[in-house]
Image (cartoon, rainbow, N blue to C red; front, top):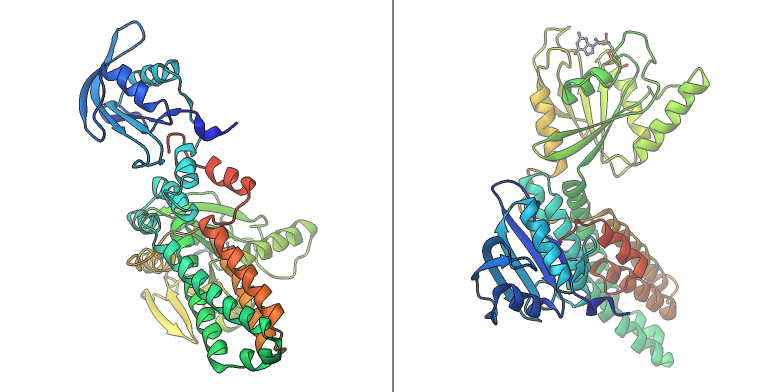
Amino acid sequence: MDTRADTIAAVATAPGVGGVGVLRVSGPLAPSIARTLLGREPQPRHAHYAAFRDAAGELVDRGLLLLFPAPRSYTGEDVLELQTHGSPVVLRLLLARAIELGARHARPGEFSERAFLNGKLDLAQAEAVADLVASGSAAAARAAQRSLDGEFSQRVNALVESVVRLRVWIEAAIDFPEDEIDFLAVPQLAADLDALRRQLDELLIAARRGVRLTDGLHVVIVGRPNVGKSSLLNALAASERAIVTDIAGTTRDVLRETIDLDGIALTLVDTAGLREAGDVVEREGIRRARAELERADLALLVTDDARTDADLALLDEVPAEAARLVVHNKIDLADASPRIDMRNAHVHLWLSAKSRAGLDLLVAELKRHAGVEEGSGAFSARARHVAALERARAHLAAAAEALEVQRAGEIAAEELRQAQHVLGEITGEFTSDDLLGEIFASFCIGK
Ligand code: GDP
């Protein structure tokens, strides 16, 4: 069965008292449903004021009716939109009416899925629709809007074009075996591949920032027992979830606390001190702490100044890609003032979890890392995109190796083909049904 042939209907707004309700219908029956509800032929893309009635002719609500004939619509199909009072009852009755007239309930994300299948949006743009709906801050919303506008996709497509150009060059060389070595040794080829790899690295950095904006920042707190990690977590989260105590090593489990800083989700993970553990429970805590560190965007090293240099060694456990921030806690004991400084390539911050002095500096620094402040030009992205870019990078590195070290044109061409394929997964040029199902199932109904 061609699922696209049937007509779907769903409430496209979260119904609330006082707001506007929108019912959306997409598919071949949309024009006839529109005709029935309006009582005459609707004019395309024209707002009609209409009285919406149920099957018995009873008035449900008055509102606007708009018909967008295919292909100039969100889904690329015939689309009908009804704007009513945002009453859940009204919307339910109108949805039931649309179903009586031949539509079926839409699955989550089905409108965007159809838009994707009909070439109205690529996959990264469709994902941006969901990210826009879910965005928790103005910065995240702006970033999602940029991806929806296609800024991210355009940069991916530009990479794909460069990959294809290089592939064509190398494949042409392979076709003339007697000249192959000379062709592959042309400096311009190596230079172009180099430029392409730099371009991809830049996009990868931007995409990682996009993920942080979309998903929030994953912050892991590390430090010896008793330096005040739990206190800091509590001060930031303003909750009592982590147990604060004077006995070293009580924070045995890895605790998670997600807080919202101006709409940016910050996940703080308080870990058992990363010291050699005495018992089994503590060893398990340390194992989990290391696992959390692997996923950290930012490691927050807490120290109480007594042993800062020794504590800095803890940062060796942090993955290379993660940013680092050193927090000197308990300045109240030394009667010191909060401040922020660069030292040995790390940002250092002096504060007190207890008196809360300097907490504002920490919050500002966290927001900077979350990408809130560099909002200009940022676009939203997902972990799936970053993973694809990383795989593409590995293929390009292998292509460079094949070309420059082994002069193996066939291998280089194959690596480029794979890089092209992986990049195509981002925009949905190459995708499996499973992946599509997974992506669109996470959308809300009506989108
Ligand atoms: P953790 O083991 O690193 O999680 O440390 P805790 O948060 O449990 O704190 C250990 C002890 O230090 C507790 O008695 C806290 O009250 C105390 N503490 C934490 N932060 C501060 C601070 O900024 N100033 C002072 N004076 N004491 C603090």
